[in-house]
View (cartoon, rainbow, N blue to C red):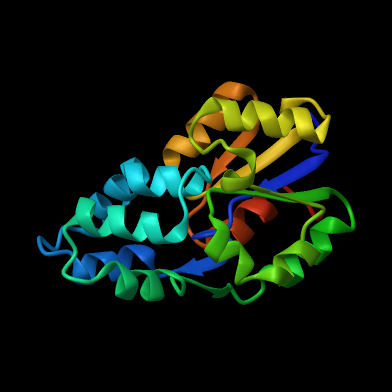
Length: 200
């Protein structure tokens, strides 16, 4: 029998928040690779990793990313576009979080950055704890970020249920001992929450 959940831990982009990143990158990349290829390149991007670790600022990130991806835009134009890639919460996401918070400690763990979190101050009211890579100095899928979050939460890893849209993140969390689930988009998340009877 799985350990009874005490903490629910959610990724943001692609799980609770609509994300335009992959479609927009596919549209502007000179070689127009498929979206699956874009996802792989995005997760492996040295510039993005450095930014989401908090090691470089927004201007330097834009300069490196435009060069790395050979984008036909200036760093300034790219940064203006990048700021708006996370869109709104999926319809129903806030309602679900509020219902879950009545029963569990509800947290998020996101690979994010100074720009995207500053643009969404309301997120602080939706979660008991908001863990972001640029504040922790650690990123998914590195196991260290999951070990650190377990330590900060002060509960056994197996009592944490984690939801993410990136398979490498789910696999890494599972190896650390979390009950990890792969979900692509809010409808898939809502369905998995129902399957797990988290509100039963």
